[in-house]
Length: 281
Image (tube, rainbow, N blue to C red; front, top):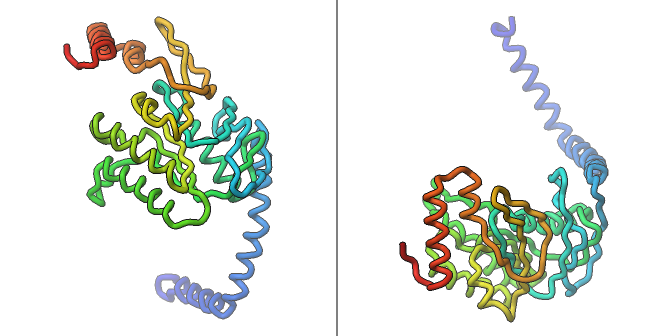
């Protein structure tokens, strides 16, 4: 019967006609429902933050200061605090917590400026324009390599900083890791230095310890570290002032069951380079 009479299509058309006649009323209803759902959603989110939350405090022209910040999606988060008197450069071994810390601060800032809810004991800052260069990937459809995607993301930050207005807060994970070592260190140094001279507060994470010898005047250094034993690596995820002094990439190969020959030869090459400054077998 429905196929013969097309009653579904006819009834649907009648309903759409009625909706058009009362479009303003429907839009008003949607808006009122949304205004009710927003505070309910915020209240539910706040109730889900078992480690606590705070309402942000705003200071125009002030520093970004966060106490007891944590990532709300972690089951057993480790809280960290930071006060940004300069831009921030973070070093540390693999899986030590650098990326998670950047995401934590970015998330705290974003939630503070949107729903006035911060997963931290306290948050004090001016209003920022928030940008990031994190978890990037190459763009096959657009024809951009990973490196091109990286430099476009960083260029957006530079362009935004020139517009004036509120300070730009940006987060950069593994600066320019899509290119060779020599040019990466040179370009990263100058990009990060440029950020410090413009209207930008930058949080950057890197494995390139060389950067810490060239940005002393404009960046504060912090690091994450773990305790390395013969058969395990334990990370405590506490942010510390200074530069990372340990590395673990080759040790992780061993823990993952790589052949002893690979691990030992790699460690020998690394030690020789650190001592002589030249790569050779």
